[in-house]
Image (cartoon, rainbow, N blue to C red; front, side, top):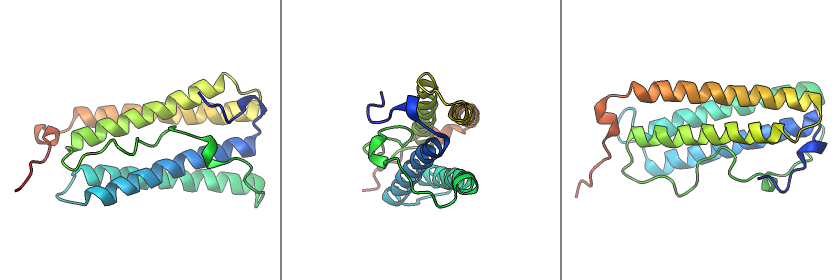
Length: 167
């Protein structure tokens, strides 16, 4: 699943850098979706993606602070090109008329992908500190899945309706 990363050789700094890059990728994708859809009404699909971008940005900031505390200005040794399709939704997954429900379904799928990434990576990781970090990140993704699933179950019926063409 991850041909460009040798998880058995990861140290904690590289693992933090991978986690940061995963979150940056998701942040950038959700921001792109927000901009592409444009805001039409409160709690529309664009709002769903905007809120997710804000959440991903918080994760970037938290992980970056942790990395900075532990490793200062040490150069990043992993490359974003080594990561593919970890958490960010696929670029072609939105539609101009998507309902908030469909947006949340896309978000849920992305959180499940991130869980699978950390869960599978753990089977290759040898370093105890990296195992701890990836276990924590996997557990966070589990919590995100739970929260989003709960939120979806509480959506009003109108949140399931795609927009209609106004022409």
